[in-house]
Length: 310
Image (cartoon, rainbow, N blue to C red; front, side):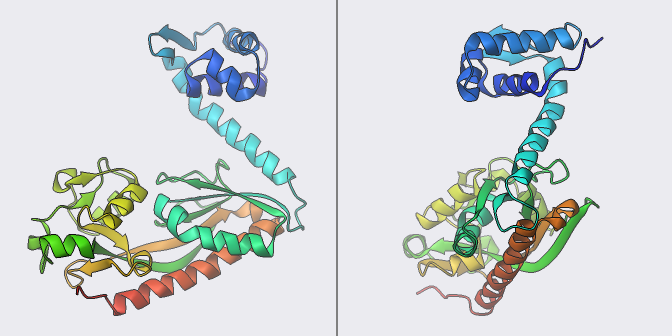
């Protein structure tokens, strides 16, 4: 039986220890001394009824099953604590404070930077935290304030605006096509070096749901980082999938077999409905919706005028 109510500082030390796998690393991460960190873990174990949270191994401190059961709840507490700090960083009616955004690697790394730079020029009092992840961060748990998503949100307590669809196509660098030839069909594409994923991700499942039977064995270059895949495509490592709006920026990225492979993904801007009272959140939400609408239009234009191989 739990003895007393553990304070947040104990859970914070617990989370840092799981992440760092050592008391010394957790102490450095939190700016505490190692003895203080150790006392926090001992106190948390005592207040939770004497359960063991960690075992020692050659790899460091490993969380027990009990610790892993606690982990998602502690992470939710951490997300709420961070959201509280962001909420307090600026008055509800002011254009100042912090906003935490989340987006996929490609959207966050390739599409959002100029959009966010323009926002900062207009509202210099607003700090932006950008988290790149292909996992879907939970807005209900306040892991982020606003999300740009490529799948329709299912949670009811969210404000969601569908921006449109971005087109994806198969592309290769001109250098690769000059060396290996231009495929004229999907069957010919299958005989080329193809760039793709190593492990399945939400975006892969979204594409597979459209009827494309993707498997990792198809790929000669495999990475779970979309940015690494894009870098490999730009380096001439093979043929890969790229958003048309991104490929359009590089004259050496050429779309291949456009009539045989064309995929559209939804674009949504989403935030928790409780944030509508915050002016800075509304400003960012509307700015993203407007700027991403222009990006979607660029993608549509690129789909109409595919760049032909030379």
